[in-house]
Every structure is written in structure tokens, then in C-alpha cells.
Image 1 (cartoon, helix red, strand yellow):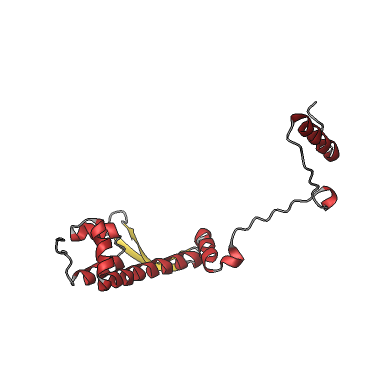
Image 2 (tube, helix red, strand yellow):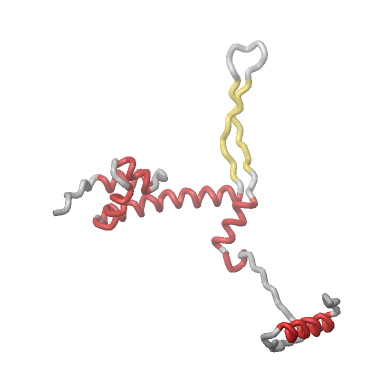
Length: 164
């Protein structure tokens, strides 16, 4: 007889919150004090738990997506510089608005994923024969003398000295 599951319904809500904070399946297993295979089993056996994990992970992924977008286009943020003037007993706090420049790598990554047809790395190579014509194909027999003769013939046509 199989051992009863240690799963409880309230685990779904807890797991969703943890996933929204970026928890992995292994970290969930550590939190619930079970093996990671148990998390996989709970996802399979309990639809509510599975949906909670997906929902929480979606929230986290969307946050990362927004952050990547902000890094790609640049942004502004509130910051504070702290100065300690000579002879003063208290520091001076100077709030200001810092500008963070756009990041080229983040922009390229974003565009390669969002507009892959326009931004993918494409390497096209075209092979052709002499003067851009068709490549001449010759069938070579399976013996060394015929092979050497064919190589010498190809070398003489291309202007490459033979290895005689």
C-alpha cells in the first residue's frame, strides 16, 4: 500500500508566493522539507498546486521581462548621495535623480527574442565555380592513382600548384 501524501491544500498558495519571489522547484522542496521529486509529483497529482506554481513563476518572469526592457531602453531612478562636510557632526543627504544609460547587450537580446526575423544572426554562404558558374563535379575512382590525377587536374584548373 502506498504511503499517504504529505501534500496539504494550503501549500498551493504558499508555493505561488514563493515562485512569485523567484523560488525554483528545488527551493520549494527545501521550504516544504521534501525531495524535489515530491514537488514534481505534487504538480502532477494536484492541479491547483501546478497552476499556482505556473501563476507565481509567470509573475516573476514578467518582472524580469520588464527589468530587461528597462535596461535595454535606459531609465531614471531616485538616489541619495551622502556627504560628510569637514567639521560637521551630521552627514548631508542630497537626493537626486540618476539616469541609467541604455544597455546595448540588453537591447540586442530583447530584439533577437521579440523580433527574431529582423534581428537573428544570419550567415549565408554561397559556393560557386570559376567566374561564378556552376561547380564542376567529377567522379573519382577508388584507387590512389586516379585520385592523385584528379587532384592534380583540379589544382591546375584553379591555378594552385600541385604537390608533386
